[in-house]
Image 1: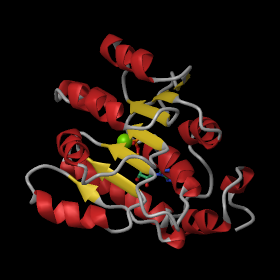
Image 2 (image 1 turned 180 degrees about the horizontal axis):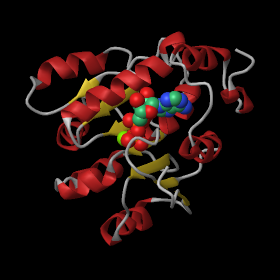
Image 3 (image 1 turned 45 degrees about the horizontal axis):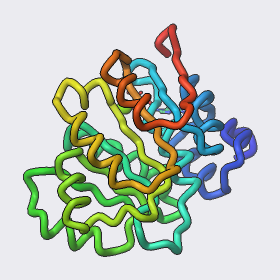
Length: 211
Ligand code: ADP
Ligand code: MG
């Protein structure tokens, strides 16, 4: 455990242990930049290529921040597709495994009421696609009053798939002063318009060599 380079961050033993189980022994360059900022609660725009480890870059700080005893969601992770939502749920589950972090997934095309029942149980980090997350916000089946982190993942894909308005409407349901993190392989004007509107002095992390 001692040779795990993630010990350089203030992470609890349960997270370090889970990372070692995943054979994550040193942070990738994007993780090295994002994790300390996210632990401080900074708003972040992170741009780096696919496969650079962006999921754990947000999964580690949000799992670290989870207070197990609280029942209402403490973080919300938005993904453009159901497949990505499941992949990211798995990664968060693995990182948070030793803390027994609860990670329900919500997406369209699946019975709303069943998801509503799942959301009624203890939910620490909710992962979902924007349309269905918005539906649950609007009906009150997803209670956002305790949310402290929101992740807009694969933001360039969200934009291409026409989800930006749903994302904006979801952000309007969230408490003020939360930490917003946006992850993307590319950044353009429309995404900067979103970050300008909703983020509070974001730190921009770019890896120009793409790693
Ligand atoms: P991105 O979201 O940037 O496209 P992913 O988060 O999907 O990238 O990560 C790509 C791969 O790298 C995954 O298979 C993941 O398990 C692996 N990975 C992430 N972080 C580390 C790490 N610190 N050490 C080793 N492998 C890692
Ligand atoms: Mg990703």
